[in-house]
Each structure stands twice: as C-alpha cells, then as structure tokens.
Length: 189
Image 1 (tube, rainbow, N blue to C red):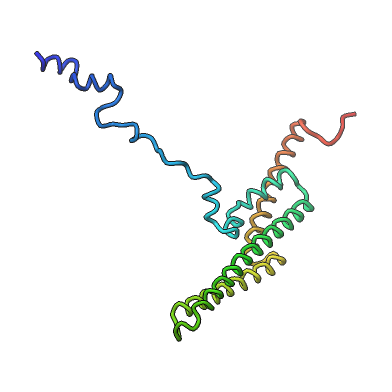
Image 2 (image 1 turned 60 degrees about the vertical axis):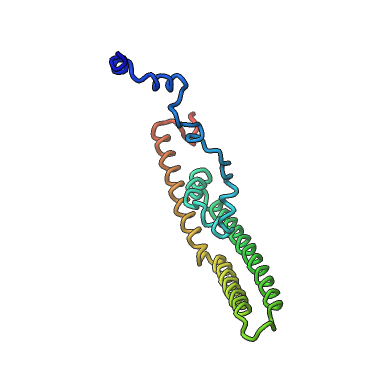
C-alpha cells in the first residue's frame, strides 16, 4: 500500500521538504554572497593616473561635444583642456617617480659600505636609474603633447574623429528637421 501511495503522491519525505521550503542540505548561504561589494573607487585606484587618463573614451567625448557644441573654437578649447589635464597627470606621475627615486637613493646610502659589490645596493641603483629613464620618457611625452604628438596623439585623433562624427550626426538631424518643416532659422512672414 505504501508503494502505491508513494507512486501516486510521491515520497512523504520530499513532501515534508517542500513544506519546509528547501530540500535537506540546501542552506541560504549557497545562494547569497555575504562578502561586501568592491566600491568603484577601489577598482579605479588600481590604475595609475596615466592609465586612468587613457582609459577614457575620447571618441565618445568628442562625439558628444561635436553634437552639442558644434564649433571649431569649442573643439580647440577642449583639446587645450585635455592637453592641460595630460600635463597635470604627467607632472603628478613624475612627482611620484621622483619621490620613489629619492627613497631608493636613501635606502642605497643606508646599505652602502656594508659589502663591496653588494647585490642589494646594485639592485637599488638599478631601480632608481630605471625610474630616472621613465621620468625622462614622461618629460619627452609632455613636450611632444604640446605638438599633438607622442601618446597624446591618440587622444587628439580619437577626440577629433568623434567630434566630426557628432557634428555629422547633428547636421543630418538638422537637415531632416528642416526638410520636414519642423525646424527652421527663418521666421515665417
């Protein structure tokens, strides 16, 4: 008789589990994440200022500016602003690297004289020479950016391309509205 009831109505143990809301062994911890979410500012802190500057979509920025502010003067002003931001980022990065060089030189002086040809001292000297090379490269990039060259050229190219696209979208929309008679600069007499 029990087999017949089980076949018709299912296992009584599963019926009890259904009444409780969850099968045995399943706990809410399986479906919930108790860890705190990582805030966006923590993720952004992983990138250095230079990487953050180049992570921006300048083509999209240019398209938005070209659509809403469709003048060559605005484009020139915005490129000057971007160049200024780039210089500030490069200066901040140079300052960080120079502080690191000073720190490494102090550590090298602390280790100096412990042993002749000490590997720790040679590593420190190698590190601060490498940082000096990176500083020189950043200075060169800053100089090239004044001429819209170097890595800053990527920003200029993407922004101008986007600006042209935004301007073209604006003009196409304007032509369509004028043709439909929705919008016109001319007043009706």
